[in-house]
Length: 408
Image (cartoon, rainbow, N blue to C red; front, side, top):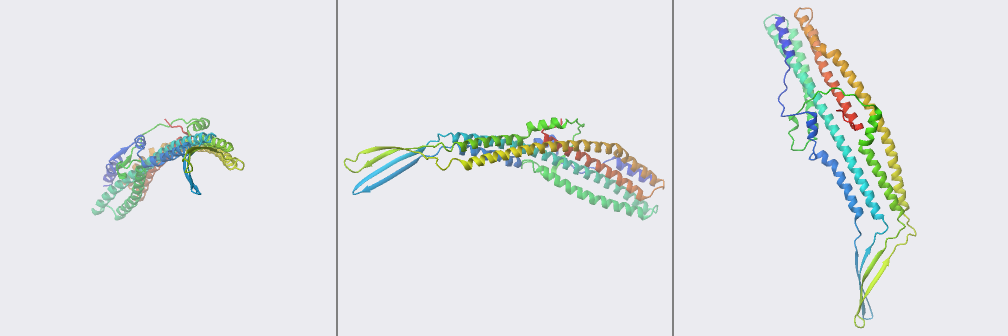
């Protein structure tokens, strides 16, 4: 009868269990393609550019003219004044303010591009998280079904008086333990599906219908840190945005320097009087503010402080980028090596461990505890390999984001 147990268990090993049909299977590339402009996350990020463009319109608007009507009456003589006044922005401050606002629009646009790149990276991390959760759940389902087959066979043996009840009870207890682990894994898989679905437009399929399909990719040789840093200097939108912010601060300092140039207000109109024949005359005047007290000191100080702040932020960001690139590159190399060593040392022996334990149990040299321990060890090694492969992918995604270099 133990030979029958071995055959059933080996068949369960060689035939993986299914976990149910999925309505939408996506590779990583297909998932990224669904991150369109209709995605609520993308729309929320890109809204910042529209706000910045509104500042350009505000900086470029002309002041409105003023219409004034005055009536003066003394000793039965009334005089009426109707004037129109218009301020003339001839100092050049308006043009410089428009240039500063346009530079900030460019900075905002590049920051948005960087934030969209971050969204793509987060989506890929969510995809990897879902794939890892699926791998764990499927292995636990497979393990549970194998143990359930074993417990059924042991139950039939016990009913026939061919074995004691301990083996069956111990196998059934193992089934319960694995099933509780599977339920936890299913919860993690559902959470990962929900997170991945949140990147897609609202018209996309429901989260529970999404399945991550991992595509095999051979390890790619990583460029040296210096090349990755040089690439980041070109691609990273944050660095470009800080350069544009520095340019905007320079324009605002020029605006402050021109505060001493007065911008005249031209007034033209008519005057009429009830005296005599009621003739109507013309009025022409020019109003100019004399820059005796306000020379733009506060504005100049604010612009210079902003320029110094941007310079410090750029220097700190370059140092941070270089450090992050070095750290993530080292993480990719180390995690690849660990995953490869584990695969070579453990995964090839997982099935052998189970088979040896089954043969030992069949011959009476080993007990049920040894068999279950071998089963648990083999299943755990498959789950761990999936986790190691997911950790490699996560490190590669982070390296791609911080460097701007995409692994082929």
